[in-house]
Length: 371
Image 1 (tube, helix red, strand yellow):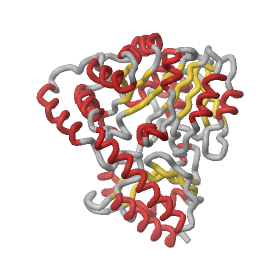
Image 2 (image 1 turned 120 degrees about the horizontal axis):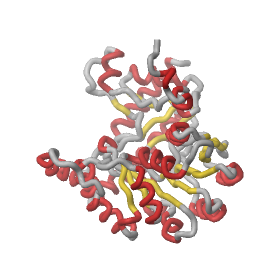
Image 3 (image 1 turned 45 degrees about the vertical axis):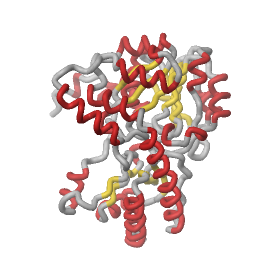
């Protein structure tokens, strides 16, 4: 008998929470695989190189000060980001990954009965956040595995407050072009906040990145760009992301965020990580080579992976749950995509050369097992 469910807001009680992957140690225990030695986790789009040496040293230096509250305004990190993107520091706000910013945006701009527009195969958290605020998600079909921006524009209604474009998109790994983004921003009504979730953008070479900051700097439309240190900088465990927008938007978001929302260790590591260009380039190089290796390997095994620009690859497989289980038995953890509305797909993160090779060997064996 539940004591709390009858007391809960019905739009919350009916939701299914985000399902994270399980710890490696628990998977090993459950399957009797022994310790975690030899287990490869390629399920959560993490940076296989880990944090940069400079970030690790900054964290060690920060340890003796962990009895102090963090800087509530993330002053030095905001300054560093403002310098990198050539904007003023009042156009930057730090948060607990990009997820917190999604919540704060809904809190600041959405009211009961409003809606947000997203692609149907985009990050599930957007839809969860809308439900938290008793709002509706308008999920727009994709064109193949890529955002259909024209269809998203047509889906905007008088009750639309926010439209979110994950670019590159999780879980498909695809990206819309600069020209498409520019046309999209021009056509979005001025009373709708356009949010570009660019958690994976910095994994691309600079020449291949899409520039959304120019629209934010132009200040003609309400545009917010979200980025994170979790992916390119290998700091997923510290949960530090940031929003960039016009000062009035940042002011509104600061009004609804909790104080001390970014811990001191995260701030110190992120400032140092920004200075380590060599580590960032090593990450990009690892991913370029790893994607080619994995894509070629999967195609040789008869699979048809989605062409990706990120640190993960999505591929269709009818027995997705069975394949995931067969790989786990072989000490390779990947992500089934049923929770993302893709029950016949699997997502694998790009790892080191050794990890990628282990995945392909396990995949070959698993496919034979499932024939």
